[in-house]
Amino acid sequence: MALRTTTNSILASSSGSKDNRPTLKEILLDFKVDKAHPQNVHKVRLIGEPIVYLEYSAKKKDYDDLDEKGRPKEVNVPFPDAEFNNSFTRIGHDDSSQCDWAKAGYISSKKYAQNCIERYPDGTFAIKILNKGATVFKPLAQWENGQVQENVESGDKNTVFLGGKIAPMVKVTADYAESKPGKVEYTVNIPSKEYELTEDEIAALMALNPLTPEQIQDAREYYEAKRTQNPYLPPFEPFFVAGHNLFNIFKYTPVKTEARSSYGQQRSSAVVEIDNDDLDLSAPAPTPATGKVGRPSKASQTATVFTDVVEDKEDDWDL
Image 1 (cartoon, helix red, strand yellow):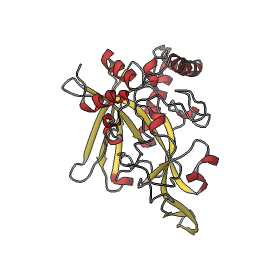
Image 2 (cartoon, one colour):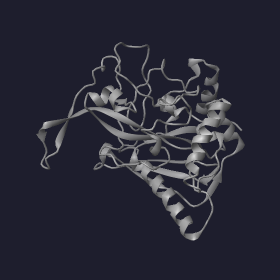
Image 3 (cartoon, helix red, strand yellow):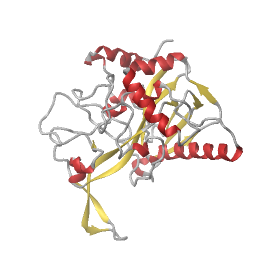
Image 4 (cartoon, rainbow, N blue to C red):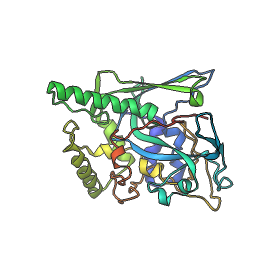
């Protein structure tokens, strides 16, 4: 099957040539809306599990200036490395004691990222990343939890996993809304009809992030341990941990002390400038705490299967 250009360029990146690498903007689902284009809709099949991370904005709380409810007001404070990194945000460290931004008092919000497949009317598809906050991921958690509860009550043994081989499509709609943060409102719908991933789609996922047998086995053991606590999860599939290398893309960005060759990828939920020298969309990336693919640090383990989705004040915003 012919793939979209962006997917072809992603697959070509496995050769190691930086010239073939896609930009982050190309692989993220674009939900940008404005008055001229008030709605943006994406229908996707989710893949595997999401990851969670903290995103810091260039703001701090002023405890000497309180609002009418006695809460400290937020003030704009430029990042100390703004001269070398023109991103509007920074990604935090799993361990706050090792995080430059947490220690400096910058304000964070919780963000999620998950691989997905977007299918097009002409029969092609692209492997993308859904990257938003709780306004999008909380409804996914609620749907899965609700389906599991229904199964428990009815005695149904069917598995429930939006990231599995057979699952419903997820429809995410962004509407322009003047009164909302970032002037956008998100709606998530999950129709009852299920769709099976094709062999071509699974092969494309596996080609994006080639894993060693040891890495797959480690991911399998971690997943199956969770499955003993949730029998409604389906058996492990290697493609659960394939696709775009989320741990490598959304990794900690420490304070920069000098400029590097290039910055320039933008994200639609916020703007993240990622240095191309640091970004490898094809090679398997170990997780920060364990060095093993598919197993997050203890700080984020509970958040990778929709079990720690929380609201944030400034959850999703676009520039």
